[in-house]
Image (cartoon, rainbow, N blue to C red; front, top):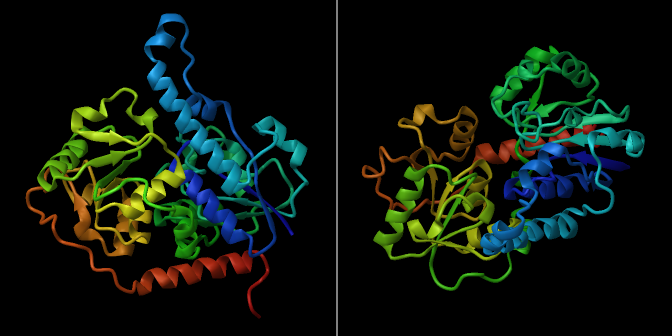
Length: 367
């Protein structure tokens, strides 16, 4: 069976590429898997390197060098670990491969977030008549009726043989749109064996103890201040990655070390060997949990009740309600408390449910 995967593989984002790797790995149980080399003009606008000329190019030479190294790190991971190479497809080109695959899988990450900067209608697979399966897409909290193509999206969804979603809020939305029961499943990073992630880590990139600080954008000064103060208190250096996220900020202002390389492999390595971890992203929390780190989830809201409902759902699944740290409660929490990891029976049940969904979708369920 030939399986094609449509996902956010063009994103220079660790979470996006690691979930793509995990989804490809999981689907290899059912056949030959190819992650389609799909991109968009919007994606290029977000992730392509800036083009400076003349004196400006000379002034920004060091920044451009750092951005170029990071960009290559992501490209290497796509090629070596996800198998993405060859022709790049834009939405108008997908008709050329409309009948190439026996099954098309759309998932996961925020591919169905119609308000996302690099969203594309192509993720609803209306360009093909092949069998279609959705695995753990997230709507990112956006309502599908916010799309100008809402009527078409409804039609495309009805052409799926199996539809699942990552979060409860997305499940409720899709059930209203489709009028059908929608299965909630786990992000693919949580259903493959932890050994897979251990195999990608390698030897420590940083010697000695350190703090790893990972955010989707590092755009809130209050969270950086928390990490900076903890660094001083514990006398531990802080490492961050992704120069593009820091291009308009100065990591040294906070006492942070911007690691020379970026991408998923560096992310996994710095996460695995860190003494302490501070995260502000869904997949940051996923891998802090997978590697059993002493982590804190940074949040910019005043109250836990204001935390994004999708992230709060994951917090509850992990039983990590007491690991949420904000500028309002940082002095009230004993940050020396170390997480005691034990069996998470609810998570195990959801892993089993997720595999059962895939078995059913691919006709492998035991009769």
